[in-house]
Length: 199
Image (cartoon, rainbow, N blue to C red; front, side):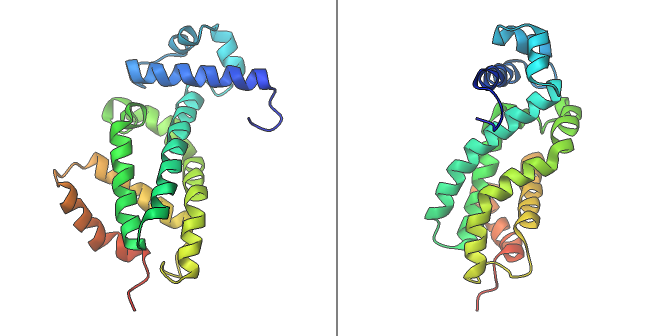
């Protein structure tokens, strides 16, 4: 629960976000209206606007951040199991690409029919999206940096932004590589940008 937010208001907001997620899945982000979300939640449009003052763009971002946090919890567990930093970079990036491709709401934000909504709702809050990612990755990154497994001159925020851009480009620019070819690409270009050179 968010600090300072009454439990009833928090429940109402979660109900609206649930409805938005369902509507985005059914109709696509670009075609979903606040009226659709209100109907799916069983609430009036005025109630939705009171609970979500930023309107539809705030709901798009809320759905994206919720899905992102779910994925990052799974990713954190995976990173704990990887044997090396290069493996964590490669497998973590592949997991992120697979997650976005399989997640209808987030995937639809990256296709042309909703590009304008991606710009308005998510790109406009890029700092918030990147901060959520950085907070999840930070403990692993800092531990690896202390062990000199990650380049000393880079920071977690820049690294997350680099990976975010890389993941997006792998999704948008479909080069028809198979998984092993993508692994080889990441080992050649992404790993040296982050991992400390082997001594």
